[in-house]
Length: 229
Image (cartoon, rainbow, N blue to C red; front, side, top):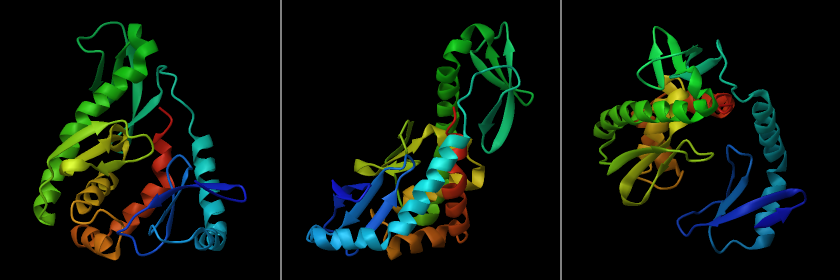
């Protein structure tokens, strides 16, 4: 841990890095990545140099987080699925706890107290199928062979390339517009070639998705909009 003024950073040394990098994750936590031999004085100087950028990013995160209220699972409430908002309708009886039918999410009224659980289960199943298909499509183009696709709660990460070349995605990825969710897929597939965000990494992303930078920017600016579930 490194503290500079009122800013605290989790240190992430890596022998494969040649430069220092500051990351503000989706929860507002600060991560400072650097080669392992960089002295603390240089780390502190780097933080001071980037201080305005850090405060700007933290302010953006704070604004977005406060703007998204949690769901209460009442009739007419909107829920995202692949970038579209669908209204909720509470019903007395149906065969499944939750269904998407005729442009509405249908939830059994008796299950409202567990509405979040049932919605996450529904999202997770759809995410596994939809993301799995996109992974197969882009893996062929990017000449990689992921070991598998798993969907779970990844906290403040959209995706992760795990040990054994398995790709992990947050179930909330299925809430994003399709072209943004595809960017998350391409991003993680590129990590099968290059584990760090080097110029080579971004070149691979760009080859597979020439407009990735526009999608990346949208995700940074609007990704928090799906947090209030």
